[in-house]
Image (cartoon, rainbow over the protein chains, first blue to last red):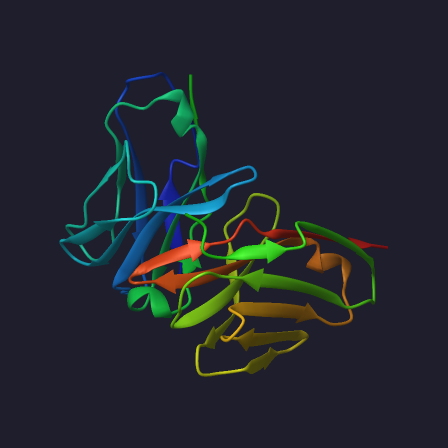
Length: 113
Length: 109
């Protein structure tokens, strides 16, 4: 089954404790991205990747890191989480670039206290 | 920065009626997409319309695109309870994808 998986689905952590949210897709998609969703603000793109070893900033990249060492995986790293990063995070992938439909993961609800 | 802005923010209609929501954007685009989200779950792609297309249909969905007005509309005909969800438009800017804030649609029984 074609899908995007994210782990963990729920995470509660404390300020400053480094964490990684994993994202994996099994569709051989080139384009992957991370979004955060906050009430009243919709989805905002954090980082995206056009292909392996090619990543770029979205609209809200501050406080986040990503890497794309393999085509299928695109982890999101929070080196020093802060309470303003409490949000619902989505990973998504598409066949190529931003001109194709995106497939979304189920989301990761992160709470930073 | 938000590229797409949906209107209205919320919409309640009776089951069986048609629902129309609009999206406006600011800069030129290659394509515009509509997505549905059920209650905090992952978004599901509904339809993609390219900048050289004016109208597209998929089942009960009809999307129009007016590039001169930088706007798009999504029409859902013969609404059902299962259509209750949030609907988002998304546009591309360079290689980024920009989502609007969404329209919350509630179908009343």
